[in-house]
Amino acid sequence: MTFPAGLTLVSVHGRADFLPSGGASGQARFDRPVTLVGGVDNSIVPTRPEYATLNASGEFTISLPATNDPDWTPVNWAYSVEITTGGGVTRGTLQLDYLTTAVELADLLQVDGAAVTGTTYIALSSRGAAGGVAALDVDGDVNDAAGNKITGGGASGIPATIVNAKGDLIAATADNTVARLGVGTDGQVLTAAAAQATGLSWAAPVVYEAAGAVTAHAGAADPHTGYALETDVTASLALKADLASPGLTGNPTAPTQTAGNNSTRLATTAFVTTAVGGGGGSALVVKRAIVGSGNITPQNTAGAWAALTGGPTLTIPASVGDYISAEVMGALYQGASSTFVDLAVLAGASLVRFGSSGTSTPAVEGDPAFYHDTTFRSYGPVFDFVAVSGDIDGGNVTVCFAVKATGSGILFADAYPLRWRILNHGPATVS
Image 1 (cartoon, rainbow, N blue to C red):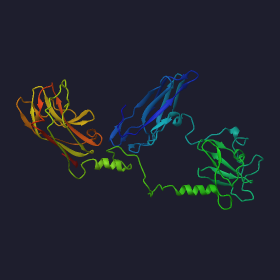
Image 2 (cartoon, one colour; image 1 turned 180 degrees about the vertical axis):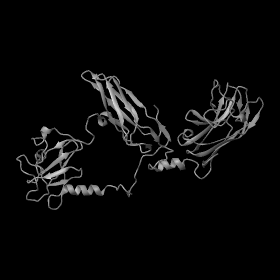
Image 3 (cartoon, rainbow, N blue to C red; image 1 turned 90 degrees about the vertical axis):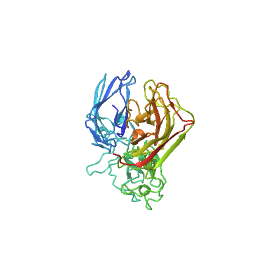
Image 4 (spheres, rainbow, N blue to C red; image 1 turned 120 degrees about the horizontal axis):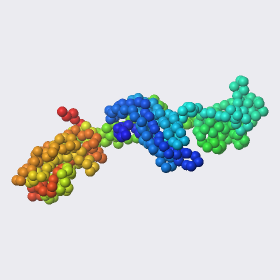
């Protein structure tokens, strides 16, 4: 299914193994339980399942709408996922964040009956065991290996617990060594005994990296003059911006939104330049040309409409909502009964709007002002429209001559020069 351009999509990669032979065969089905409404497209996206077929390696990749896109209603829903292989059926739920471009299904899939994200489980046999996790006594205190309460610092009076800049729980023992009790960013649990085995003292506080490695961290040598880990927290917080009305300094950056986006997302200078500076703005912008480089014979288009080969074009900066007009002020044309001429908007290599109709479908015989005649005739048609996103290519609108011809007729642009122009009148409401 082709989704609206304004809907945020997330690329989901998955793999299913059929051990011991390798990749499984089958398909993954993603059911969206809600109809999405709104967005910059003002679209309605009805419910329907999306399918992905597993390849020979048991892998697939599929692009799915985010489940919390703030521009669409509702938000914070979840997909029902069903993966069918030769080994059976796996079911679960999936949520996709609109700020993420690509994810692995195995990282996010909540398999039916599995734990909810954020809940950590440990084996009951590891509680209070050597190399396991410390157990709490009846008072809620942690005991050491000998069964003694760890309730305070030693002779130096170091507090029993503090929290470092990563949010880890730190406990200080009587001999002033520091132990980390908790789960790091990699989910690894370190016991008090494991930390104390490093022999690091409070004079050289410790920092635990993501992989669980223990490294020394410079801090206050005297535990009474300040706790280094607490100082780290304070210093780190001082560098953070407030969530409410932050006073940013320097040159903050943000993603540049798609042209025409009408939401509460931040607008960068690049977005504003495209939206207002790139178009007509409040002043009329005019591009004009006098073509005298040589007469043009329309090519044979085999009954289809095409841009005139070797024909002139005019390009002008424009934005969605700008009022554009193209005017032929003087042109001499010797027609042929099988040749028809029109003005058209050219986006890339495609004719997307014709002067004879104002749409992407031209009149059968083009603009009446260019209707064929075996004598010399002069013309001056006007083609005007309000630009939409499909008319704009690279921040510009380009107008060309379009023909449906069999290779006959002459558009003079030599001794009889062709004079024309294109105007951007800026944002306007046209009726």
